[in-house]
Length: 172
Image 1 (cartoon, rainbow, N blue to C red):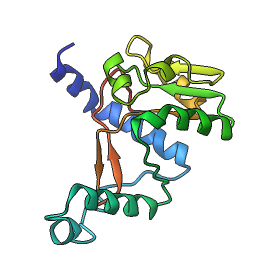
Image 2: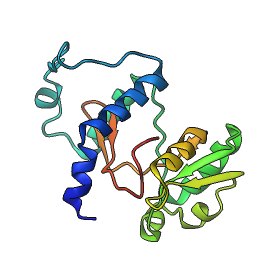
Image 3: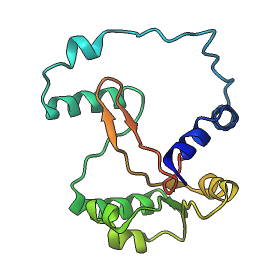
């Protein structure tokens, strides 16, 4: 399927509304109405404080901002990541794991090729573009832990962004 067709589907108002309603329902909160609350920057942080920072300084700012909204940031070298995930899954009694449908090269980039084949969790599902949307959503809903690959960490907000691919999914 051509990329423009996939983008048209992703940007379809009905799909977007279903996705946002599902998030609001899962969070137990009403939907945010943008027309009632137009975006206004809270500060000029990116322009005033982030210009001319080194990658290490930007990482430290991103971690601080992530942790300010109760996110736990754990930095691990690729060589330690598989052991960390296995230990974490055991500590948290994870019984259902959702993995992205990564290529072997993507798993290897993070040193997770062997781990992805045997992560030490009882039930493992893989998000797949070969499954229906409902099947992927059911797998996501049953997951105690989902592994995703972030593409960017934004220093100003401490948020992670993911370039959406059909094999990875967007519901985690």
